[in-house]
Length: 211
Image 1: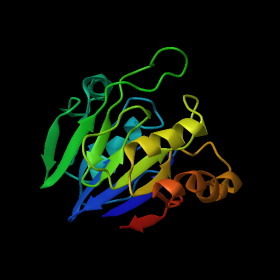
Image 2: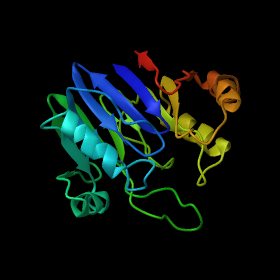
Image 3: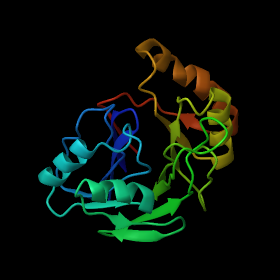
Image 4: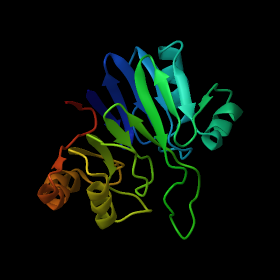
């Protein structure tokens, strides 16, 4: 598996030659990948779903599938973008790659959830979107762990990783941090997870990790 981070919460995942992009939002550059089979959208906030970026991905990748839940799908339809619906617990096949949806609600920012959210298990990787309460079924080898946002604190991110029990954690949702703070994450968050046998792998914007 290869995981490329474009920035913030947007990642390109390649498994068995199949490429999918998750959450192309306006806090990262437009993904420049070709041969992409699907775009997965966890929820409709602009840092995860930027219509201009999705249109560019579609133009660069004829036949690409755009997959999300109904709430985000409505916003896509309003923009004239075709999409496919996935519900919590659904498992779909994208060119032989299994993708499973998990969860239904964005983490509360204040008291209540602001919108729908679905996480995606893509092969051995789980990307939770803006939720750190949904634990997917079965063993997760790699967890894309949100590390910053107005709806969380670091202790909750660490607890979530301990609950999911992956082998490896890679950080996402971190565009609000300085380079200095991000550089400290392997020591700070990784140190908290080490005793649980969880390895923290830093993934800077524009870099790729092969597992």
